[in-house]
Amino acid sequence: MKKLVLLRHGQSTWNLENRFTGWTDVPLSADGLQEATEAGRLLREAGLLPQRAFTSVLKRAIKTLWVALEEADRQWIPVVSDWRLNERHYGDLQGLNKAETAARFGEQQVLIWRRSYDTRPPVMAEDDARSERHDARYVAEAARRATAGESLEDTVARVVPYWEEVIAPVVASGEQVLVVAHGNSLRALVKHLERLTPAQIMEENIPTGIPLVYELDDAGTVLRRYYLGDQGKIAELSQAVANQGRLQS
Image (cartoon, rainbow, N blue to C red; front, top):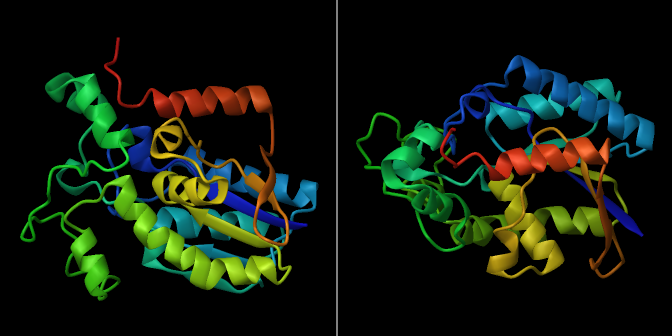
């Protein structure tokens, strides 16, 4: 049996402010740093000590990985960062408060932008000051195209090939793998691993800083999945993710 651990980065400063973040490279909040430490402790106590790690090129994921590995005493393992594990690019929504956006456009529209499988957000112009199009991290043409804005379907289209070509062979070899990424890039991976439909993945809400463990057979079929930690708290945190795009009462 193989084990794979997925970890959404700890709370970022824009998670705290309930903003669409996407590829905007914001840091962890103080709570996010604590979540990363706690994630490392949970991994260590569960004996899920990674031998190799993969993450995005965004600092909130990289920092989460560093802190978790330090807590688990695994800072020496090989780490690979790749833009294909980045969060979904939210286009022109990046930086906007989700509840305020719901007040402007309606909760249903924001729900579609956040959770629809194939609907892209409003496009970000190439000359927008927020655009990452000319960032040195994104020299690949596919990365530059993504900076206009992505649907979850677009995110799946870059995450799954990376999984199949790079990460899955390492998991299949028997190495313990930790993937630290983002809500939507991990949802893309969850959809693939569990063979979920577009409708089913809309209901998946991954909380920040909680290790999600997959047990796989030799063919890569999911045998079991579970979060580490207090299950009641995890359910509350998952519901909080679902509520982000709703109007504040």
